[in-house]
Image (cartoon, rainbow, N blue to C red; front, side, top):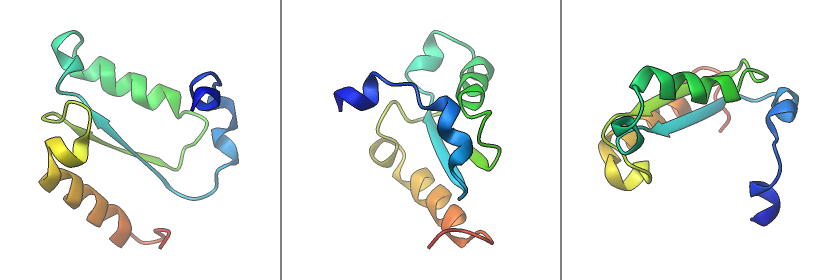
Length: 87
């Protein structure tokens, strides 16, 4: 875990060829910054991986699958049923 937290992998994201789904929890941190700023920050981190799709959850604080299980399941179902999805 320490190695993952101490290394910046953003420059290597372009090597990933499969679709990437990033789920962002906004409820807790949106108290301090505008939602648009937070979403832009997430997207900026994945500029080297244009195949990335983002789903943001306004009601989730951290653990999206616990804080917004219905939204999490719907986003996951949509991603897995999309054309070209990795199964």
